[in-house]
Every structure is written in C-alpha cells, then in structure tokens.
Image (cartoon, rainbow, N blue to C red; front, top):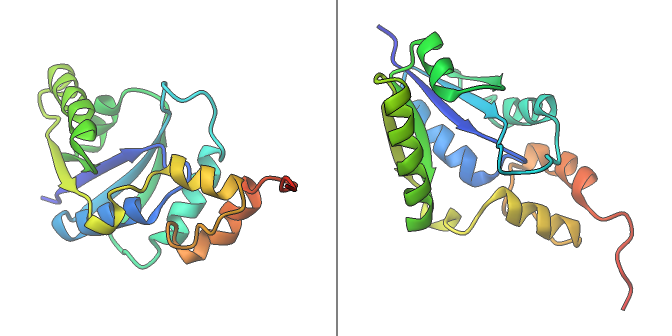
Length: 167
C-alpha cells in the first residue's frame, strides 16, 4: 500500500518554508500531493491557482514523489477520495498550532480517517510567510532569501510595485 499525504495550503506564493515542509514530507510518505486550496479568510490571491501550481511544480521538480493539484472544496472530501493517510501541516509558532489544531479536530469530525501530521518549521523559516514575501516584494525589497530561485523572477514581476515612491 502506498502511503499518500496531502499537504494543503494557499501557497500564494510558495516560499522556502513551504518547500522545506514539502521536501521533508516527501521523505516520510510514498506520495505527497501539494494541494492548492482556496483560503476563505483571504480576500484575493496574488497568483491564480494555475500560476501557483506551475510555480510549485518548478520548485519541486527534483522531488519525484510530489504532485500538485487544485482544490475548491472541503479538504476531507479530497483526502478521502485520494485515500490519503495523512494531512501534513507546517507549524511556525504556537499561534499556528492553535489554528491548525482546531482545523485538525474539525477535519477528524468530518472524516474519521483524516489524520493530521504536524511538522515544525526549520529555525531559519520561523518568521517566513507568503504575506511577508508579498509585502517585501511590493516595496522592492530583496525576496531572494525567501523563495525558490527558480521562481524568483515570476514572483518579482507580479508583486513589485510599479513605481517606487520617491522620498
């Protein structure tokens, strides 16, 4: 039996923190499905789901057991359909745990087979989020320490403010 894990997120855009969790999950499971999902709490995405899928595919091209998919619906329904044995979530801080723990319990109520595995982030990525990347890029800051090099230009082109304010 192949052990399938689903690693859901909005990945808007994918960061080195995301890539770290995906890479580590790929060593624990036979197949990892990186699942681009709609985050109901976020108003608009900077990248379309298809664009995010292409960026993740480029960043994970070296990982033979990773595939990418898109979801617009309940995670547990997807987990059940693909017969995944785990939902993999990365944790940066206690505040992440509180939210993710609530989601894990909700998923378990909706589908008893929904097991959640939490991976703690590497210390160098504890502060990193897609929101941080977007804000730094918007103001013309260097985002190269935060995102995979293979998609750096794609992210810059989309997120950098058209004209920097002159002081």
